[in-house]
Length: 279
View 1 (spheres, one colour):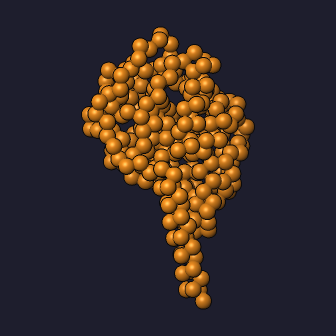
View 2: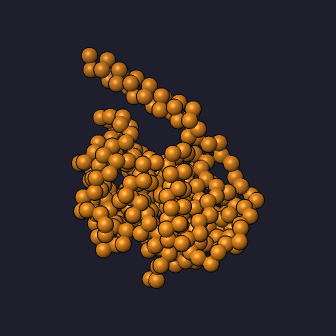
View 3: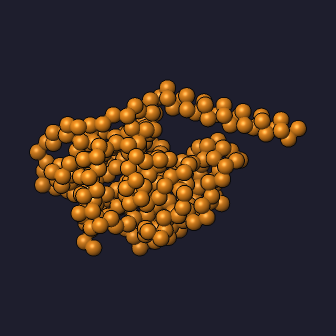
């Protein structure tokens, strides 16, 4: 009897995974890999804070989250007097063009998107003092063609997120209320999202701003099986890479995240903090 039950559960899981993959494929969530070699032409940019929002995907594509984040950054630009340039052309990762921007945002970037020369340019730019904001899927690939990305840019290796249900309400515990991006949040912030887990806590190599309360949701792969518990579960942090600084938030799968008052304020204050970094 136990074997029959286990077999039935396995069939349900496999069928569910197959259905999820099929739906995502039908909706264009997986892009075929492409690599850009001709840099985009930049318009004449005004003398104001310049923000590059890069959102190329060579793996799972957040077809709702990416445009919602674009709209949010455009709102910030209008409100705060920034210039925002959106592109999915990875060839913008060259020394000349990267150097024209005060803040670089990787908005749900997925897959291996940079050529070897572009990797060198981006790495050099970050280590030389760039300010970088990485959102959600930028740290959500199960494997990377470029080891520097999980080891230094993100400093955590994604291993999975819950399914059945994929999106859950959970509690984010704020660790550092002194940080400008955290000041407006309650000690225990309730949020709904797709919750990432990592192979190990990055705490030893990053400054943790918020952790995920694993008792507030079901940190399992499929319904009741496949534990994703980390124990210590950072979910928002920042760290220095050479003279540059990287801020990573694992939140932001759904379009609704970018209209949520608290999350918008978090990202706005993060951008302001990075743009005005003096230490």
